Image 1 (cartoon, rainbow, N blue to C red):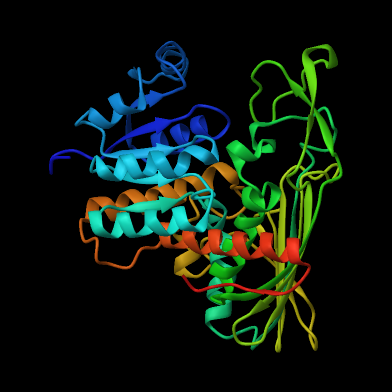
Image 2 (tube, rainbow, N blue to C red; image 1 turned 30 degrees about the vertical axis):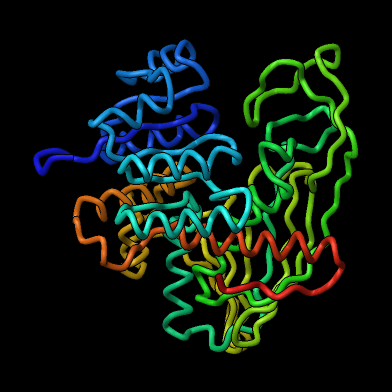
Length: 386
């Protein structure tokens, strides 16, 4: 990258999330040099469909292109670690989808490689970039809730409710031994850790698989797509969880509880949390992202609506529109990417990073390891620091 132009990106994978990355990058003025898909023909077709100049014939070809400065990894989980490792070795900055890796050993290696390479590596925990999530963080940092007592909530979806629903995440070779927890539970855990500033010290988890067998389509199907007909499917045993119930112990004494589900009818993408403090409480729900509930004991409760004129500077900078103009999921991607690319362009890689890093991704993998062990042993498990 020269001093005369902005960083150029390459997106690897064009399923559900790849085009969402593309849209957000265009909104902040970042040029996408090209796309990578499973083969050169698919890459070329997707590039034409999405209005991108190049469809690279391979991931290696993208890494060899000197015009590519940043690689966005929007591929299945099993490819995150090897692709991120290759991109770092090629001198590219990396923005990887979550979870960062399949194991904490892989995520630890990636975090160390990024540090040694002097490159900017991030994980797409974009949901912490809603304006009112940042506002909740500022409220806690100002001490307005008092001492944190309880942190509880859920992340609920219904897109895998039926045994005829299928996605690559159901295959542990592609998605890992944890599914619902790794896919959406880590979003919740990242968010509440970001808001409270508290580390999860120990976990007790129960995992539930309600569909021991699912009908797998014989052909490809994308995330959130309609189901294939029964005649085009084969029965496949399932070993990963449809749902999880988790107890948490936080540093400082706070306690927590989390329900994660991909089989909750009518819940399309419902991440919610409540933080109960010794003075007051607050609660937020991703399906109503532009309001923040404030709970009081001795006065009326209130609802804070997203309005940059009323928010803290940290939250107001994430609000692209005036009060009364709703913002949602796509804006979180824009906000994260804007922070990430501004950091790269500033050039001081020793400065604090205001986006989720590979170190944050490694923290989530340590949590996943502890949760899986807890479920298997039926016991509380301490979460290691590294």
